[in-house]
Amino acid sequence: MKRLCALPALALWSLATVSGQAPSYSAATVLNTCNQAHGPYAPNTGITILGSGMALSTRALTATDITDGALPTTLNGVEVMVDGMPAPLFYISPTQINFLMPPNQVVGPVTVWVVLNSIAGPQISITLQDAAPALFPSPLAPDYAIAQLWPAYSLIGPASPAPPAGIVILYATGLGTTEPYPAEPAEIPLYAGVIERIADFQVLLNGTPLDPRRVLYAGICPGWAGLYQINLVLPDDVGPNPEIRVAVGSEVSPAGILLAVEPAGAAANRATASMQAAGLPLRPR
Image 1 (cartoon, one colour):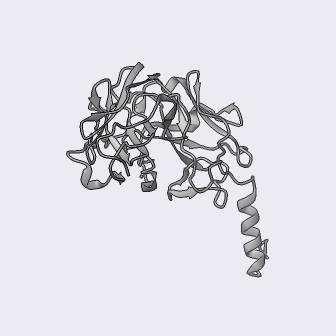
Image 2 (image 1 turned 90 degrees about the vertical axis):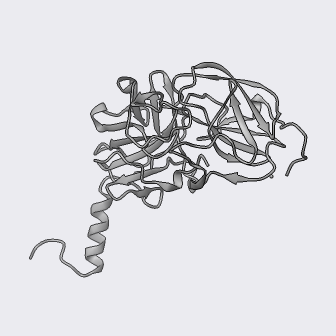
């Protein structure tokens, strides 16, 4: 099974101000970009700052902004400084900035501030931990995780649930360091890299740990900075729409996210209904 990220829509990482005024925001307006929660945060995680006067225009990252396989650290005069070093940027606007907490950032307290055309906003402190797992919710069904069904990479959702025993791809953030791991702050990894704490990694379905042998891969999503993917095989008896959480050691992703799974036997029932509608015999004559 290829460890490839096949979901371009996951550019999820990815509005006037008065010239000369400093950007305005606070530690209370910092969010995890993945789930819009006020922490926790880890290196190699997308982070959102909400405020005012943080940019003179709205701009999302495009392919032309990427140079030599690296994300930009400045867009239209906007920078986000992390302990004095510019962080990679995904999106800027007067009221919102999405940036990547550099993967090589040391855990513990870090100081963050926004700079617009050399005018600095307030310095705020946030705390990083080595892992802060979170699953990306679907923008179309926020109670459900973004997921795909292998090998077709078809989207999984309430209208197109995964079958029991199917191979599912999930997308996450905050799973920690991997081997290999981006060496430069703005590097876009083009390789697979398993999380180093794979022995401490769990997938929980309705609170029950999935057999580790069913976790085929948990690591970097190739071609995407700050994004992780999890490939797993659902149990035969998973049950419909279980709550799904992922954990690295004692750090567990937030509760309340479901995985769209159809009831056992649904596929067989659909096949039977199709045969009946076509006037075909259900048993050989």
